[in-house]
Image (cartoon, rainbow, N blue to C red; front, side, top):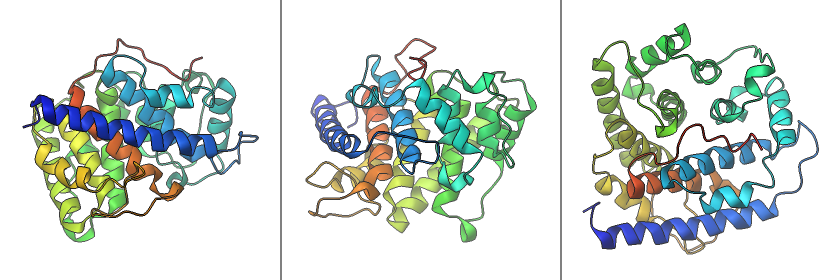
Amino acid sequence: MSRDPAYKQLLTLINARSQQWLRNQIELLPLLSEPADPHLPDLADIAVAAHICTGLRGSPAPLQTFIRSRVTPDFTRDFIASLRERSQADFRSGAALLCLSPQAGTMRISLPAMSPSERLALSSDPNTAFFAEAEAALRSPIPEERLTEQDIDGYAHVLMLCYRFGAERPRFADVRTYGEAFATCLRLADWAARKGLLMPLAQMCYCLCLIDPDHDVAPLLADVIASQRPDGSFPARIGFGTADQDRAALRPTLAALVALHMAVHRRWHNPRPSLPLAA
């Protein structure tokens, strides 16, 4: 079904509607003025999603164009400076943004309590201990009785950094890691669907295709597609609705957009490196 031209056209239409909603949200954001600006996390999330969508398309995605004027070297500097003042929960896409920032490697970043994804993002060498730590994190079981949406978010970020968002296939020390990570993603996707949580379900659709680009995620995406609001946004919870949404819908909409791009384009088409923050 996912290879059907009509289905691909539907996903493309849904993508376009969600990007227009995101454009409206970007235009509502004020100009950033200092590292403590509360809108920095939102722009970080948008910048990472724009990079992924552009890489999958092989040409600048509309979202990349919408945010280009906001993501400048000054923004990157302010973002890195603010990392030292915020908790990891405040910057869930912080590690991914660092991976895209050529300035990060020259600023000698030292965070009080770096997560595995942050350490991985600051390391360009797949043979480092940081990469081994990330591989171990991907193989570590997460008991379902204590599984949370934040656990899935962290797992998705580690996996996408190992794959550099889809631009390369990691060389794991143990070949069983690929299969174990794939099985984990299937289990996490099932958990998200049962809990009615849209964002982790979309994240797992993206991650499953990172590991196996030919995997058919159409059955999992069905709930995501059916949840899109008339204004183009996606809600936090799976289900039909007609009410327009505010900025609270930003992260679910970005996660859905990335998953839909992956379902349409399947593989990375941009040459490396693709560094939208270098301008």
